[in-house]
Length: 257
Ligand SMILES: Nc1ncnc2c1ncn2[C@@H]1O[C@H](COP(=O)(O)OP(=O)(O)OP(=O)(O)O)[C@@H](O)[C@H]1O
Image (cartoon, rainbow, N blue to C red):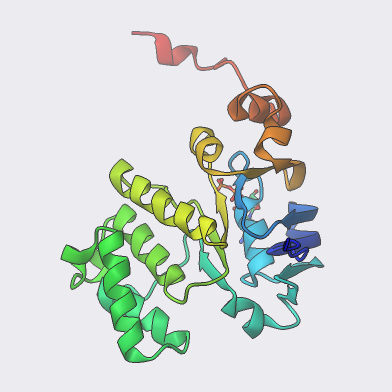
């Protein structure tokens, strides 16, 4: 017996747009993220990646457009949609006067988990993130990379079907990053879907099977990794799509010694 693939994308967005004053951060983007994909979102600084992910996950209200998670309208049925998602937002404040252990457990309790399950999953997650020794430390005293990891643990605790991770590897050491990559790969192999935004092309190229390139609030390319990069590297394709390579003219004063 052959099973037919589920045609409902893990995330679908149509015509998402957001303006901040006169700045168009996201300029009517439509995109589909297939179930079971490891999807990379890349773009230069200020491209609109964080804004796009915030609009798509219900953190920021769009001026126009819609988003669906596994067919559930994010803005019409937010509770249902959020139950399906684990989100690692960029730069959002955590309850940092809790210890790492309290914060992750609290995330589980907020998701309606019983205390025992929340405790045991917290223990597993802190060990997987190499934070077990700092479980009792206040999050405010964590380093940037430790904070990123504890936020990721909080996003994973309810075993969501879709993980949306904004710059998950920023400030994370290479050993922890490799451990996190393994966790995410296993999660995708088990049928979960991951969306990561990243500036690190090499990482996206090694980890992701799909990629979207965003610049100036527009979607420049999207598809499987091979469709987007063609026969070049993702980095070369990115530079040719986005442009912006400049010679350091006007900085002659920096070479006067
Ligand atoms: N709250 C805000 N108020 C005003 N402008 C904003 C706000 N958030 C984002 N912007 C602007 O929208 C544009 C897109 O920003 P966004 O943070 O989405 O980019 P990004 O691709 O995530 O960038 P980076 O890779 O540097 O994190 C930028 O020009 C930014 O200055």
